[in-house]
Length: 398
Image (cartoon, rainbow, N blue to C red):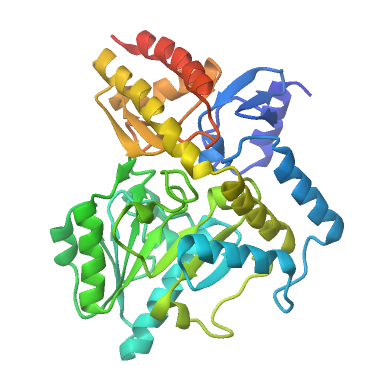
């Protein structure tokens, strides 16, 4: 079939829950993807911060092929070697005590919320505990994850959601303090807000949240689904700060393309869940966790975090140049290879035009162009991106 035939077929088959671009992807290689017509795209979206090592990585692919030939799935009534390996490695790099593998980021948030709720219940027997989340946050589309997502347009069609959720202002510690009471059992935050516009936490804010949790016997939950796994120049973004969360969620680049997530806990939070409290059929299966184990091995083998730190200044310099050059590009913000350019009302048009010109970028919020490329990008990739983006920005600068 030609491209339009595929698009027509999709539009007649899928739920219309996405506003898709008119691109039908066929394959990927390195930092580029190709559509069914053979057009080449430089991918600075990485499948929404998923493909840390780019496309077609032989070492990664061979590991999955090997696992497919052994066993893809068992069940959680048995142990399997890849999940044991993956959990041990993930605990080490995250500084956590316990790991539960899920199928997605949203499921990881669901698990974290259950830990918070049960922790509160075990502490005082109440059934009306509250969780503080943040305006403009994004934690997923399931009902629990949606309940703590701080964007009304996502929540309103599905209310009533989980009760007892309060929203503070990100990077405003006083707004958090104003919501804490005897019912509060946890504070949930993205270490770097993604969909909300690429906002890293300030040191004062995140350290203040940690102290609030310590002083009031509450859990601190860090959503690292997008900002974790080396993207910011640390394996997890909270490692930039003088804090340790009680619960951490991960997904996206955790499996580099295989659907897998995890929630992790340490200390008192790691002792909450008991047999029967949580479960999953596919979570932690041998294929998914072989991907996790392989990804963690590759991060170590190739010192990927160092590469992120080495290449980030060049990307920041290039993006800062666009802020200086174009009046409607008003700011750059971000951490590591999780960056955003504030382009105002023109942001959506910039993304659309970039895709038409062979550069994959995504939005963050309504006014930010998001840059979350594979972590293996080179200066040459950045130069290629800059050439296309400069052409697009120049065409919008009026």
